[in-house]
Length: 228
Length: 69
Image (cartoon, rainbow over all chains, first blue to last red; front, side, top):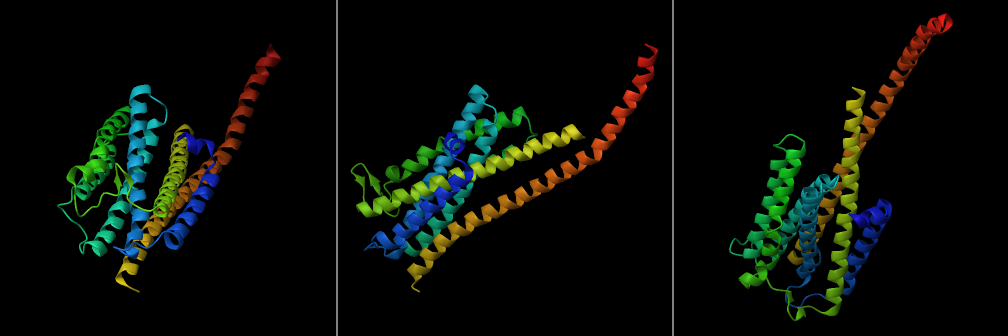
């Protein structure tokens, strides 16, 4: 991530912590309590940004996979892997927070008839299988190419999952962002934007940390081979 | 605490616990890497006198040749 390279990791972590503090303050002290759903509507400020960040992770992973296949950019495969790994973590958090919100709002943990939920689960499981494929092949160019192709296939599911809410016109899963703009007050929209920015910065921080660890690991392995 | 408050707190807690667990896993991996670096440094320290000895032996072998020359 070019941004992550420009900003040092401690600075990135500091910005993330600051944005989270601001987001929490806005969610619980500034954003109004929803007249219909009450306090549970505040789950929206974490649940939706986490879901959008997981799409961003998968999209970033696919972009890096494309760079690996197209330009053979050194390290693009590892970057793609780390982005997808984080995407799966954000995806899992989306499913858990969504289930908790569903339990309080709809009275059930899961609704199989809702296209948005099922398509997100498919996307999540698709990327979970990415790791099974990756670790079933010996390390090398073949594994890198197969992983990259798989990551690129998965990106097709992102717009389908994102647009499912508009295609299905579900009554259960309300459409918040319409053609006429966001269906919320200015304060609610500002809170949502800050929360999303905090999540994106969290992704950038974790991406930088995990990537640094993975690079160090591979360099150590090389050093061990040289010493052997 | 109302059920709405409980579920909202649970949702936020899940996110923070999830991120914390991730940070803990990464920090344990970094500790493992630190241990590996320390091992490599130790190995190199053990090998350096060995290498120095080999270098001295080579020099000793070269000395008579130089004297003859």
